[in-house]
Amino acid sequence: MSKAKQKIDSVVDSTAPSVIIEVESIRKERFAAKDRGVEFRYVTEITKDNLSYCKEMLKFSEIRHLDGVKGNFEVCDEKEYVASNRLNKAEPLQQLIYSNVKEIVEQQQY
Image (cartoon, rainbow, N blue to C red; front, side):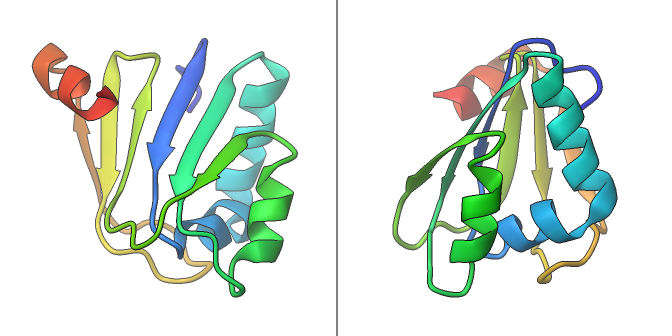
């Protein structure tokens, strides 16, 4: 997050909004990045269970709904790819997969 200069594009499952808002360190980093001019775009499944979190996320991001999203990944400035394993509601991330291999980042950005 701290390396982001322009934008972060994310595809996240319906649990992710609770993690983004409830885990203080993640929430603070998102708002700090927005203050630096970083744009956030999310594709997620908006449900009655995560609607309040999605509304809070609208303060720093653009959100689009897609039914049945599986998996969680982000592409930062079209240079870095980060994916996480299954998320648990409002709990910190346990593991991340990172790559800056151009072909992998391009594939995920697409």
